[in-house]
Length: 581
Image 1 (cartoon, helix red, strand yellow):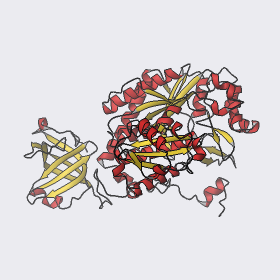
Image 2: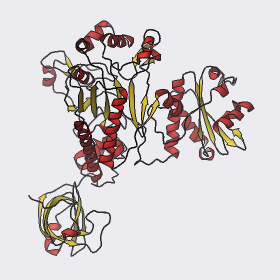
Image 3: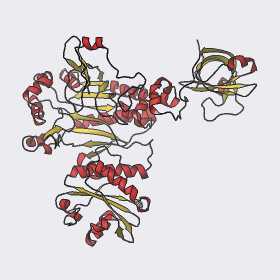
Image 4: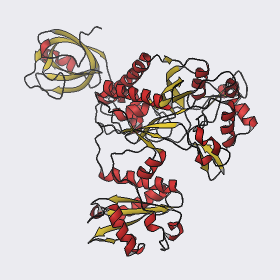
């Protein structure tokens, strides 16, 4: 079959041409003497016109039939401004039904009321929808822009293994049993972290990869068990040079894909600054509702609710300007639940009416504290103040950050075609796990500490800052990077602080540590979630809409029904026995 044009191509300049088209029937309208069919392919739609001589065959044609037609391009009497081809139509002279179709389980159109699991079960039909095809085309444009930019800077694209050794990187591994080596398992990589560092030790200096990664963790709207990231590693570059490299990358991506001019340099915030102000290490700074510290005002508060945290705790307030009358008691109860769900101990509030507070806050503050709050927070009539406190600065920041996001969800409308990009730097190298009573790596254990903070490794690891940098866009963490440890003794020291024994270090990372003996260069890198970038640039609600064949929220593929049971023969070959609980 030969086509002369695709279905999004024909214009007025093509009038009188004889054309051949192929595609799917998107819509059929029978007007008696004439039958109109919208023919669809990945490029668009063309309206076909059949006269009464085609009555026998047009009576057979249904939606999603595949047709091959020939005809003459003519000008439409009534143009359709919603279609790129809306000024023309094709008077059909020949038609062949290439294939038929059963009634589809949902309408193949941008707007559908089909449940997501139905869409995923019939994903091959869901992907016929123009909006889904455009998502995948946008994703392709993103990766094309990435490759072009990095190729021009002398980076080399190198593949790393998908069957590798299990090494702890923050999430559970997906394990693959080895048939040849009975009782042993490969792990699917959570990232190419160790291999890309080994490539630097190999002297390749500039590496990148569009890498497939696997993490067995709970799912959400921006997370999948198997995902894709742009992985970059460089030798001999400073933190600021790597960040400049990344800014140039996204300048190109946004220009190539969206025609958007990104303003550089991007803003940089420390971890403490974003937590203090936004209650999140991945803030959307467009939302308003910034956190304000009011600890000094409550330092001597003796109320039953606040006295335990008054002297040594952190007090954070959020002001809803002019929102007092918009929030009912039921609304405030829901907001309180959100704060507690995110680690907050309580949430109290005060509404401003006639230059004083009404609400729960009136019972907790003195007249002097009320006056100081009015002055510090610039309160006006019909404002509402939310207040929470905790002995842990981080916990109250995170809890109030969740409140900020919920208030913004209810009351703020942002322009999705505008991009709020920033860097977050100076993260702590370690976090203290209260349940385990040990330190863990804030990101991963290969991140280099600040030289001036090395003295705290033995005395107070919580004070050690990391050469780590996160890139944030519109409230999403697009990616993380860091300068890496390249000294064997330092790497072992970090492993020891997070609780690994000498035996565990040797068993899990022996091959990696051994490479440090042979002239390891200073190096660093970064990785970005391709799915999340595509999510934002397509203005989608979930990354499942920018992945061709995703899993659902239960990590199941409704189409292929993966994961599935293995046969007894397969299990025997793999030396595996399934025990019932």
